[in-house]
Amino acid sequence: MHVYRESLKERTRYPLPFEWAIARKNLGTALSQLGRRERNNELLEEAIDVFHEALKELDRDQIPVEWAATQCNLRAALACLAELDEKHGIELSGEAVFAFQNALKEQQPEQKGFVWELTQI
Image (cartoon, rainbow, N blue to C red; front, side):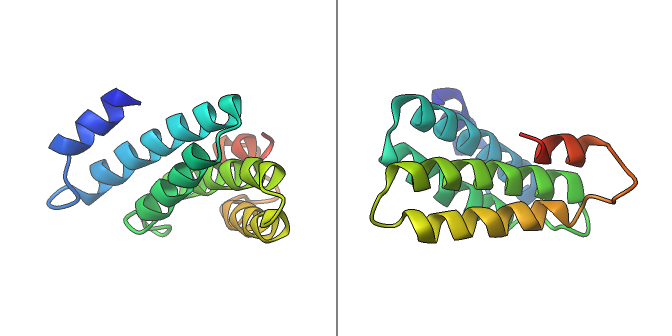
């Protein structure tokens, strides 16, 4: 996680928004996995915020696989936080479903490629 935070000091949003967004996605994944393992709401919340920021720069039309992968990662973090947060669990579950539906937008029924594999997690 420290490595991703350090790389974001060098990879600023502008002039390299795509590289910045990928670094954010990677940081979000690390935060989400650690938050899930430690059952830590704060880490999961930070991961969700990081994924939302990354999605602002990941254009679905230009880079659909990265966009869909980030949506899947967001879904996983939201679903995990929904299990831990009794007060907001239903709302978070709804957001997780929405992120999953977004990821599925890049899945063609006849294909079983990378995006399909991401949605099977």
